[in-house]
Each structure stands twice: as structure tokens, then as C-alpha cells.
Image 1 (cartoon, rainbow, N blue to C red):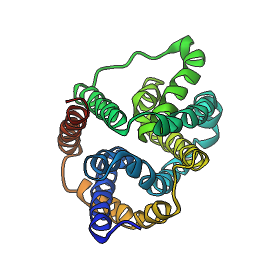
Image 2 (cartoon, rainbow, N blue to C red):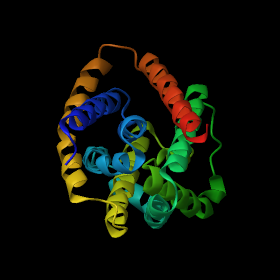
Image 3 (cartoon, rainbow, N blue to C red):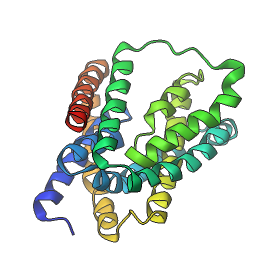
Length: 247
């Protein structure tokens, strides 16, 4: 069982990560894993994020009224993501954690730069069907190894021309399935421990409290201002993780 100091640190991190998700609607696993990797370690971070990420995204994926339509459109990407997650989790066993931490830092920095520049991603058009399983597998690999579906999974979803409500629900569905596949993969590879699984379940409490607080904050400040501050901070965190791993 983690010591008291570690438990307090994990609680604070999930409170912050939940707050970010409450304000901008995304970012709980990204922030939580990034911060925990910096202070605790990647292997522990990947395990601890499973339950809060899964349950907070179940709600997001269920709300919106487009569940069946989105499943029919996204199933090739989601199926490939499950396969990719299994292979990604195997990297935790065979690749040095410092290298994976550096890779996570690069992913966070790249996603932050993209989000700050907000370029228009060209829609895949007729390439959507052949690209979907490729993007899903790559996103699954990232989920299994560093618990980050955003690169390239979230970017591919943003390119599909979905409405705002459809995009939010599509991300919730995708993150839910990827996180469930992550839990199965970590367990199957013998990485997920019962102790950290229980700690992950307990982390749902500060994560939910953070989300509730974040929703209050969202009504009081400009969302765009918070978004830019958030991604700038995420960029710095990603740069730090990459520099620490590859220095």
C-alpha cells in the first residue's frame, strides 16, 4: 500500500486533474498521468489513472443522444484501439520507464502546441475508413504504454467534422473503451496490482470533487483563457518530462 505522503499527493493530483476536466471537459488522464509521472513514476501513474478515467468518461460517453450513431461510425477505430492497447501495455514490461516517460512528455508537448495553435485539421474524406483502424491502433498503443489517447486519437476525432455535442460524446466513448482495454491489458500483462487498483478506485473521490469544483469555476471565468493557461502549463510539463528522460 502506498505510504500516507504518496496517497495525499495522489489525492491532490486527481483533485487538480478533475478540476481541469470540469472546466474544459477533457484532460483528467493527461494531467494526472503527467503529474504523477513527474513525482511518482510512469508505471504507478498508468495504473492509478484507470478507475477515475474510466468512470468519468462513461458518463461523458453516455450523454448526448448519438451513442449508436457514433458506435456505428467509430467501431473500426475503437476495435483497433483495443488491439493497440494490448501491445502498448506490453511496452511497459520491455522498455525502460524513463524512455516511456520521455515519450509521454513529447506527446504532451506536441498536443499542447497543437491546441495552442488551433490549426484546422483537414477532414479525411474518403480516407476515413482506411485511416480509422490505423489511428485507433496508434492511439491504443499510446493508451497502453503511457495512458494517453489524445495523440493521435483525439486529433482524428476532431477532423471528422462532428458537431460539438457529437465530438464530446465521441471522445467520451473512445476514452471509455480505450481505458477499459487498458485495464484488461495491464491485468493481462501482470502489471496492474490489487493495491494500486484499490488506490485508483479511491482516487475517484478527489477526481469527482475536482470535476464539481471545475464546473463551478467554468461559470466564473472565460473558458478560452483557462484553456490557454492549461495547455501552456501542459506544454511545460511535457517539456520537463522529455528533458528529464533524455538529458
